[in-house]
Image (cartoon, rainbow, N blue to C red):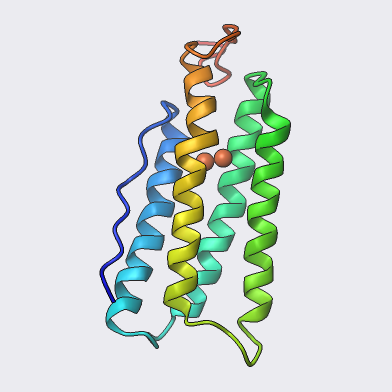
Amino acid sequence: MADFQWDCPAPVGVARLDAEHRQLHHLIMSLIRRLERHPGAAGAEARFIEIFERMVEHFKTEEDYLEARGYPDLAPHRFEHELLLDWFRDQLVLRNGPGARPLVLLVTEIAEIIRRHHQTIDRTYAAWLKGSAPGAVSAPDPAQAGR
Ligand SMILES: [Fe+2]
Ligand SMILES: [Fe+2]
């Protein structure tokens, strides 16, 4: 199998969110690399569940931050997160069934889905935060409040 490539996502300009994006990217790519070499690698299923849990946490952090900033397109962004997690939950259930797909294919698919998410709607809020999106308003950064 050809080695799957995925560059670290471009920063959105919020330290915590960028750190979480990098962590998720690292977790996913490490698992893909292991599975490419050893398809039945020990602990791989547990890693897959960990990626899901990290995504749940990251989406919550991202939504809370955008809500605090008054981001106007939060509802569709949140909806996209929910769809993604629903897809992931379905895959977790199917892992225990007889027709479970090879884990490397599934992790590569989640990488593609998250890459698309980063490159589209995460970029949209990053642009809004920078005040460069049409109709952007300047909202105070709660992380800077009180300083
Ligand atoms: Fe997002
Ligand atoms: Fe994100």
